Image (cartoon, rainbow, N blue to C red; front, side):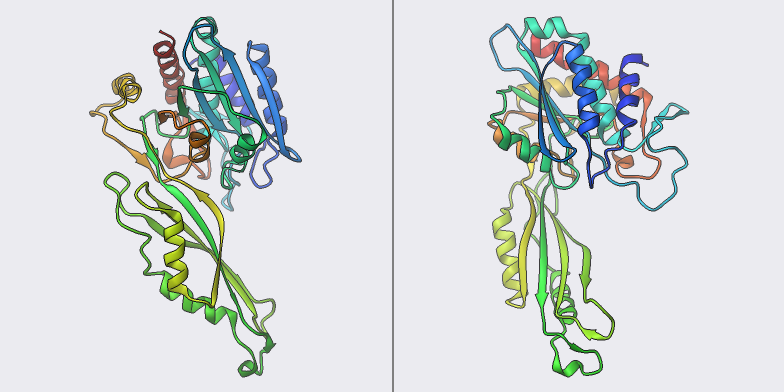
Length: 371
């Protein structure tokens, strides 16, 4: 196991960056200092109290655009189940590195950072490298949005997103459209409900309709779009007719679907009794599998997998939804050592063998880019 990569990963895991509230700033400052000491040019930016993003550069002397890596330092909450391992203790057992964010995705950040440092001279003599490190990804790419708005992003030639894929190259992911559906009624005493209009009943009627709503046609690779009602609330007390209720809808889409069209169709279905507002609007991501750089990544990854690699996508979203349009849509691959099945799980872990593979894999990809 590469000691430097593991050491850096364990340091990053030691910071509590659960989002909400995020509080990535201390972790980001530590990482910025580590990168600065390793020769990177550093630019830190804030997007709220305790919140920050980072751009790190190793500028290249050769013609051509740099290779970029991106990752986020915030994590999801721990959940209600009891952890056997300290979520911030970076414990190692049976070849696994445990901790919240180990698979999603602090280990990947450590791996690509160390890979760059080990090839610093080649990068400086070549086309250069850029790291785009964000906070706020888990709640809808808030950090990436702030990073884009804070200053022009550097030009890049290709982007690697270190989200968990068990080192399998992934060419895209579904989009996310999160909608809040709200109903309004009229309050009255619970003993005289005929004098009121029950907003929960209106929401229940809407839920009956939405349960059978299809966001659109399937995509050849991403298959069927999905819809899930993940949260509902309404009413203030048991003995009053509720005058307000709302529920939140999570729609996962594909490149063949337009979010504006989905929202308009859903609004027409639900009618005037339901008001829709958009919480998150992130487009799907899909790179061309026949692109020369993507094909080169496949060749580098193939020895790590028993079966021939096939075009693959993931259902979760990433910062690439916002970063790619802002970066003029370079080719993009999602590739990281984390276990996809362990993301957001109790006793989350990353396999040490995958972490070691990832550093060597990122290094080989850097070598190819600088040649």
